[in-house]
Image (cartoon, rainbow, N blue to C red):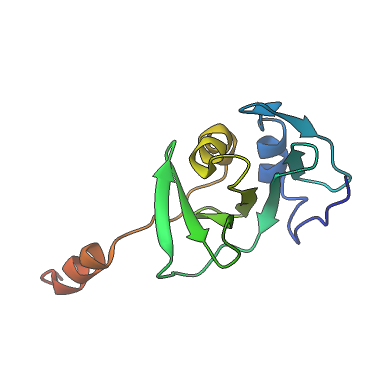
Length: 139
């Protein structure tokens, strides 16, 4: 299957991720792709994965934590979801047809691999951010 590699697909962390993605997600078999640091599952493919993206900026989009990995959920193409790791450099992204497979099952299957990516941040709620801003300053 043809996919385009992300800009930083040659990052060594993506190689570590690529060797850890599962052969199956639920009942979907992995389909081999022709681009570095990518993977796909299903025939036709309903799960597309890519590593080596620019980390996303802080966002008001929903963030879920599965398997110790924070994922920003973009519902723009619903029922397809685009989920991108947050607080990891480089970032990884998965595009899921939720009419064919559960997004939670996909993230559960991929979080072990994505957890290899160096962590440099985490999702917070709006309330958490306000508490940090209101905290007393120390010198």
